[in-house]
Image (cartoon, rainbow, N blue to C red; front, side, top):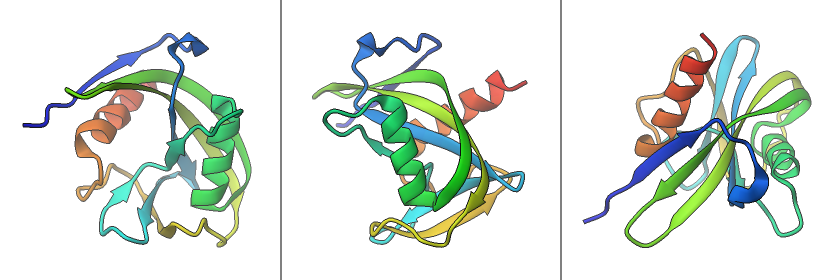
Length: 140
């Protein structure tokens, strides 16, 4: 039986050694969600931090690759921890305001969707719904 526990932190210290970045993105007053070419579900843009990258560099790279963002602002907003019976991973959530974007996407992303709310058909509902809901609470 798989159990996932997610905790959220306001602490943005790099000592957590994050492995992932998630980028909540707005373009023309709508949130952007991406669809991987091999899936039928949507997700918040993001991905793994590559060796030698900072979390911010990874967030910039993933945002460009997955949404086609050209001109944007990016800021870290909180950290998260995901634990299963096998391991614990950490990540940093960023917020991006995209001012201009291209139709060019990363090879793995098939589509970018614009929405006013979190999608019903999410790839990682246990994790990303909690991250998105926490973001909405923080911006109030």
